[in-house]
Image (cartoon, rainbow, N blue to C red; front, side, top):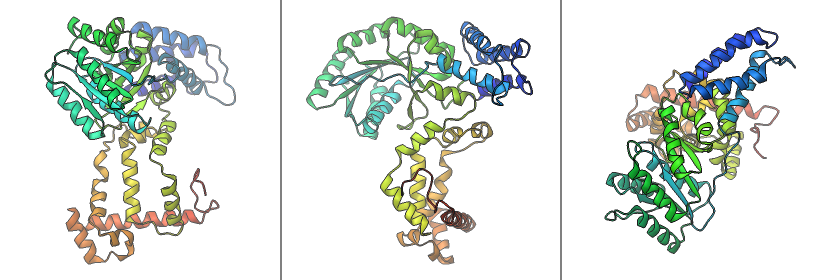
Length: 440
């Protein structure tokens, strides 16, 4: 995500390397390179110029204090301005009303229907809501089918009327059904087109007028750059939407949409989405995104993702087993499952400061754990709980059951034993084997 922009900004800051002070002379090339990096990322020239003018005004004459280098100071100034450009702070998401009504709009192919499913899953699992999703795309039966599949996948109710060609009446009937069945959030997925046209705009505007939504979210494909910003402006002029959703951030994203859209339509980015999995939806935090663009990582989000999977009771049990050197294959498998629930592995590693740049060209497959899982799942419950019981004949059977070579099984066993030894060493540390932040 934003790899090209991050590299070019880092290169721009190198102009200040070794300088004792920021001044008119050494800032000129830096600002020029920052502007060029933004334009290459498909940010509008006017926005890029205004941004770099603000950076220059703040930077000129700044003295280096407390051993902070000019490069570090410039990075901080750019981070602050990027944060402000993208909205400054987290935007609130309004789910008031009974039911709360959320209208989803955007072009065909932007990821509207997938986002509708992700938002329903987010509201159900993170906010404790009982959502209903509504299929108001009356032109594409495939869109109704897709939403139905997603709803079944996440366990929420879907409302559709396949023979009805009036989107307004479908939305109104869905709200009546939601009230009758005690659903407290209604998410309406509207029709899209490959390009803006009057029929689409009128239809979604009529649905808005009929249902009075608490939120109108415009979904935009972040890979389309400046085109996405122009489309957002056209939709906003007609709908006056309340927020933006950026999808496909895991693709070849140059960054133009994320950096320009708030400035252009003066509406906040509320969510960002990547991939097809239903749990890959995040609240948008401008400061955290600015940090990631500048290669600083995003430890806060990483910790939050970990905490979402954290079970204090299970964690205490696991700590006791580690302290007694009783960590087994089932425990290891359980931890792998928790990590996988946190999201895309490469994205997670990219949140660690300094790691994102190091792995940008490394292909990290989310299926990397499948081989290990296959080996463990080919063990009997007794074998999982008793790693020392794995003799050669058991290992041979496990290898056949998992479709692996015996050497692969032996290599995994060796790695597992080394990990247990490391855990045993931690038990002898002054903290008594207690992990930071874990209550005793």
